[in-house]
Length: 271
Length: 271
Image (tube, rainbow over all chains, first blue to last red; front, side, top):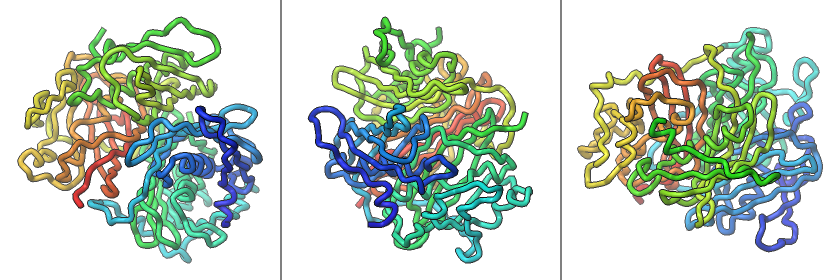
């Protein structure tokens, strides 16, 4: 089993009839930024439980999550309550709990991910520089900040978005890059949730150096990704009132749109 | 009280200590498309309850909703469970229930909506033709389809997106227009949820005439809107696997970004 599958595994407890399905998870400290577990990783854990509880609907199609309090690495409980099992899809309420209470709650839609070509599309791939011309994101970031996630995700950023390192952010509000799973595993519908929650936050490209914790994030999986790297691009539209919106798109190695996300993040703006 | 405020009103039942706050609502048949209550209107009812339960955090900042089964006009119950009451914002789980069960469930964030100018923005208003040069959306749509919502919302669509009426959709995947509340009330953070869920679905502009029910929708309120009309633009990126993503932006009469949304909708594509 690959590292992502192990880190996001969930195990069904004996069903107790009637109530929500309850799963055990073991949150892995490597899927973290600083000492905080990564939001996309947490969504993947919730998504895996939703897919396991979704009957015939085994692919995650969409997930909207609120991040309530950061969980600790280690044992956690996932509850899934099916709200509606329809013909084409299943809608569920999922939550991640530790002794401290609800850490994250998410609404999920599962179903079958089709393989057909899109009926209509105006999606255009990020058109990044070649992977080898992009800059690897180190697990030991400048300033001594530790990003364990970069040991399990191989991320190479577009140099055009890295001006912030030298104190000269591009101010375009865009960060893009290539991503692979470091152990060589292929991307799948659940691991794409990790790719969509790219690090660093796009606010770095706007000269806002503080962390930008995700408040609410909605991710949509559009297609099963082809083997190989994904290109991910994130754009902010507006920063104000200490909040920022970020739209994210991901394309697979065949330049096909595989996933999209939008999040609202908290960000500290100068007064 | 204006029509929207009445239609979306919620009344707190006597608190029963400990559990979720329970509100009564009376869903108004006028806020409907055909015989289905409008998704943005239902989110507004949930948002009003979340704001009422949010302590000092009385403005809705974001809401992510899953639509599970269409409610009937008439009495409904709204439950709000505060997941975290933070310093700057409150996160809640909300649900809309009738005797048939959960009709919609949404994660909400409430807080104070600031009044300051954005710190950074690349938002550009829709730049529509003047309101009087746009086409009023009739409550009696072609083909005898009844859209009661258009009696309470005054919507004028960009003629460039109306080719579908004559069987010649633009195929740009975009519909935009002006909106006002028909009784002359100003837009507010909750009624913007209605404006963001524009009618007709953008799939009409792609030659896909069937209805496109929202599966999951996330709306972000960025600013208190100025008095006057809002401009709303919605764009699809890709249609495939019988699903479509739609991004929506709304600007107020001062051309300021006031709200954004993204939804995934079910749409029937030709085989």
